[in-house]
Amino acid sequence: MRKTRLIIFTNLFILLLLGIIMIYSSSCIYAQSRYNDEMFFLKKHIIFVLLGLFLMFGVMCFDYRILKQKAKPLLLLAFLLLILVLIPFIGKELGGARRWFRFGVLSFQPSEFANMALVLYIADCISRKKTIIQENFFRGMFPPLLVLVAMAVLILIQPDLGTVFALGLVVFIMFFVAGVPMRYLIFIMCLSLGFFYILIFTSAYRRARIMAFINPWQDPKRTGFQIIQSNIALGSGGLFGVGLGHSRQKLFYLPASHTDFIFSIIGEELGLLGTLSVCFLFLNLIMQGLKVSRFAPDVFGTFLSLGIIMIIGLKAVINIGVSCGVLPPKGLPLPFISYGGSSLVFDMIGVGLILNISRFSCLLE
Image (cartoon, rainbow, N blue to C red):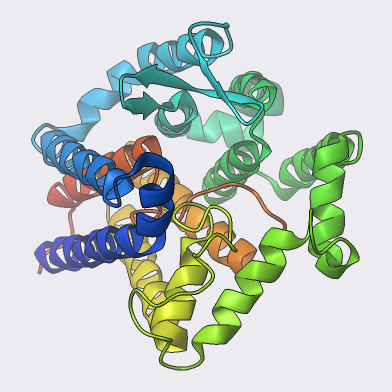
């Protein structure tokens, strides 16, 4: 598995380097205008990259199997943080959402920690009760589903529908791979679709997002503005791009150009070749992560690595899909590239755990 670990680390290094370059390129003018410091976002991002590297190498240094014993305490800690962030004067509110803890110039988003804690818990449940999960719905699947629903409710209160959607899909995939009967999965999927339908169409701003996704030109100056500007950025890049640092859409046309829509700036500045290269890097990373999952030495390692790589992969697919206009806006960052400290750090911790699991793999070179 040494070759697999080398490929994973190389992909990660390239994505991190591209993220550093593109965050500076996409945010320097906005940062200069708002904070009188064109490197404001870049400096904070580099701090999180260094912290992420430190923690990533840290989680590679112990036997990942001890996390089985820590799964429930970490899950309880995640619930505590999700509750605390909703309390005024403790959680930081920004743009009508209360999702962050603020520590000076740095912030922490507990839902990112909750993602990791839930995947750990589900992997532990499957490793302990795989046969029961396959045979008995109420004794097997029902307890982890209750945990998922409780966590989803707390995250929705923030509100953050995109994270709930991605997390629910990851858990669904983990259960599918675990061999849960299709009748159970179809039942859960139908309930989930009804739940998301109610959430979307009983909320004015979510309904407006869906309508903007279906026809952004119906309201091009408000709800459809981001999607239109993103498409303009991608279309302007052509095959080779307009050149690094020469994006026009980042000049206050495309909101969130260094966070949710950084892929669009990559398309504008580096062209179709740049975006395809990013897609290839993520595809290669996902394939290597699935290889680690396939040859993991135990069931816990299999489902832990599967859950982690699915979180990273789904974030990438959803972010790229939103930027290209084929998925409605979800507010999820592009892993390792977008500006966003908590997401970056926990994605890097996730890669560290995958590398940790690969060290114990039974696959010989």
